[in-house]
Image (cartoon, rainbow, N blue to C red; front, top):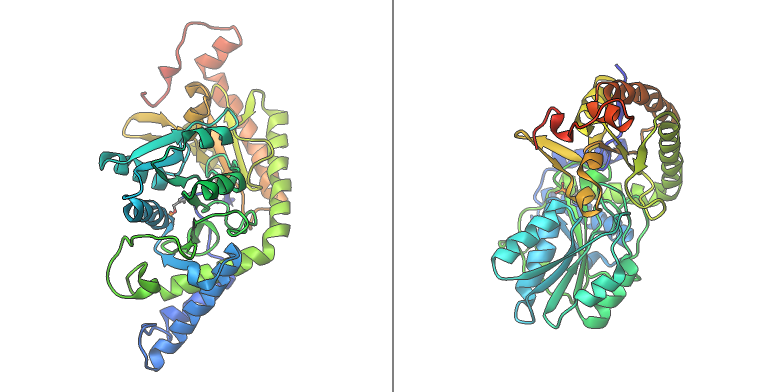
Length: 403
Ligand SMILES: *Cc1c(COP(=O)(O)O)cnc(C)c1O
């Protein structure tokens, strides 16, 4: 069976060069990088090198990189670490309704402990309004946490403007750059970012490794106390293989980004156009331009995203849907809900996220197999018939999953 992977925003494969870079530290170079004897030397050197490679992607100094276990840890460190360090200055956080759960649920947790959080709205494109960022600031605001690019729609936020605002008011600005890293270039200094978070497995390194940029001088209380690793900012014996991997992945990302992004944008648009030509009632979720080059989120009205996914899976195509059918309840994606997309439309959404191994043949295959699936599902859908006037009075709840 064909295997076409179009779910790179969920995770990526490990790049062969990345695998090569990490293997020695799972074999002969097993030493503890803190050891001063021979066994510690190569691991220590590997960490130093990786720190340079990651710093190069961020455009920052090596001393400003903290290795973490994942993107979620980076977001937790940024948010909890900042409010803990600054709680004498205020108790207000500004974020958005469309953040990754690593940010949203951290903020929700902090609300229970007495912090106040403003969750900014987005418009129908999934874009925030910079005026709302400004008007939400109070004398108590200590942190603005707004993602660089959204994982579901690929929408890219006006990080430069936010950085200027935060800097002018002396508020810490954290951005979850997990989806931006490796897809679009950024310079944390030019953008006035104080804390930026990336994750290895979203850019061709393995799962379980992340990196956080922390601007020199910005105070942060560590989450994990222990030894003096990472300049006392994150204790724990370093994941040397993972660190070597994310270093190599960042080096490759910087090297290949321009060509690869252009290539993926062409493939993505080919997919969009091909599907929209063959399938009626297809809607783009997200901003048409301010969007990651690899991400395409579409709604196929009158069908159910989960069933689409299962049918695509049977054809060997891996994608993602805008809802998760868990424990009998079909929750539409919080991102699509925040965009004001009606539930019945967001239920029929699919996210295609492209990556390095995708070819034009892959895309054409999807353009071939998906339209008949949608057509078949619509032909069985009372809703679709209702919309075309053949039947009436049937509500959306008729699907497999209960609301
Ligand atoms: C995947 C992802 C994370 C979490 O990263 P993990 O390494 O899986 O913990 C955070 N933010 C965004 C935007 C993501 O896409």
